[in-house]
Length: 274
Image 1: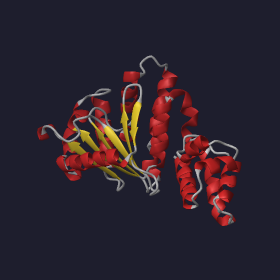
Image 2: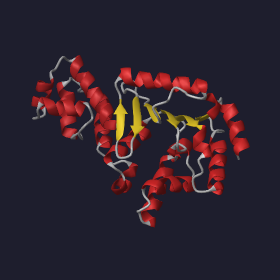
Image 3: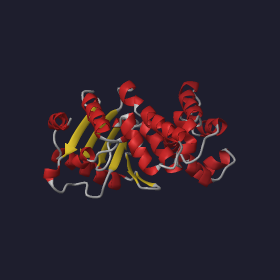
Image 4: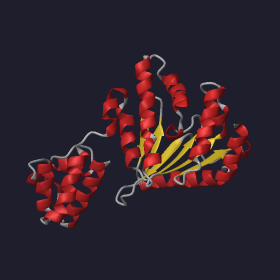
């Protein structure tokens, strides 16, 4: 995500000066295709290349250069989840990076409690469904990764989570009644936080806008970055960031939020279920 942000800023500087990708590539001894990949955040940055591009684009004031050069340094640093890299498929590692940079996450789930709201015992039961061949250490590390992702909800007031979950999520018993009770109690606790909104879509509403299945929308504090829609599959994931596509999902999520129980009604449902 940091690479995307830096690449966007470099592209804006280049186009503002009317410099072609070919000329920018020549300045750093690279092809126009390399400039394109840099601007899309698809490859890592060398600080020397960023410094040369800034000079080419007329950014010579040290006070203006320093933040961008520091951003290049940070963009190349491994994320906190690097120690779990052996467990993460590349398509999901991308999501963790996006999730860590997002300021607003809106999600709809129809089978499981969202990962950011799972208690460890429930997370273990979910993880075992797909990784029952892993040894105990591997399962423990996967649970640890999931709980580590949740810390931002408690420590970063800039993050807002708004989740709509189907009633089936809470009716499907994972890990046994004690685990489900602990999970419901946790949902009641987190909905008291000002940065978490939870709504349940009851069975009695019949069909609803999200007939296609679960998805998440991630929004970032940098206005230059587009929303990203994430849809997970069994062995891969789909990422959408073109406005016509993401706007459709935003509208669907808005309709879901209207169709579902209100947050206060959801709390009453959870208390009854407990």
